[in-house]
Amino acid sequence: MNDTFERCGYVVLLGAPNAGKSTLLNRLTGAKISIVTHKTQTTRTRVIGMFVRGSSQILLVDTPGIFEPKRRFERAMVSAAWSGVTDADVKLLIVDASNPDFTNVNLIIDELSRAGHTAVLAINKIDKLKRSKLLSIVAKINANKTFSKTFLISGLNGDGVDDLVAFLGDSVPHGKWLYPSDQISDMNDRLFAAEITREKLFLQLHQELPYSLTVETVSWQERKDGSVRIEQVVYVTRPGHKGILLGKGGQQVKRIGAAARRELELTLNKRVHLLIFVKVSKKWHDDAERYSAIGLKFYQ
Image (cartoon, rainbow, N blue to C red; front, top):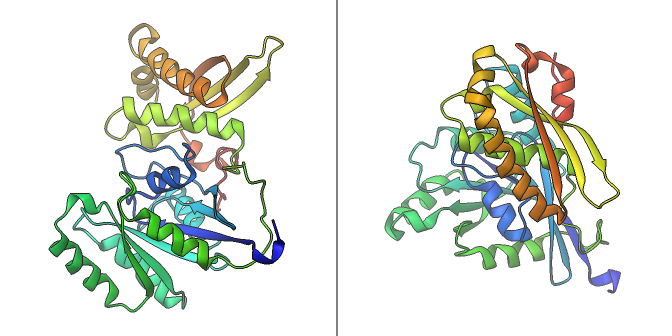
């Protein structure tokens, strides 16, 4: 391809928790890159997904949901969401149209405005509301004058997404592609495997337990028969949480491990031997090593 006609740039996805950023990322890349659950704050660190449209390579930066953080770990997640915004070629704010509480949305808009950033607005989950209500939301949010363009989309079923993609392809700057055309993510296999297991934990466990644990891949061994042996540790903060996660006779963690193993085998296209260990670490939220393992910056 002639470099003169190539485009390549970063599009940072911003939004409140559960706005649908990861769902949109996965749809655009055509693969599961970010984990998705019905729970808020599922995404914990930045993930880059890549896709090509025409002569443009678009690098989507999925970020944790932005809210008012209270704890160190929450501050690290929000900081990860904001990092790189200044250098992004396009700032794309995704708003959940079905959530009437715009407290976090307003927080994001105020910060974008304060920093002098112009952004693109994508009103997501439009399949859940009548058009008259959607237009009211668009008018309300655009009163701030922070946005150069507005799109109405559904990341889940694809409504309006083609128009958004065409706009992004024309908006990233001219320049050589930064990654091979068939690469879809910058995430390494160890972190991806840990994220898949964490997704299954989120789906199986209830209340606050998923938010008080973290998953690390501690061993990855390619075997001669073409399979891979993966060992992971799930850190929880209380002995009682360990018991809940293990379940009677270890059945709960076995079910979670089996679900994670099946998905990893489909993704990696090889047999997977997955071993999950559960450890109590009362203060893993204050352990810099735990932050580093999932790509977050540790703040003193």
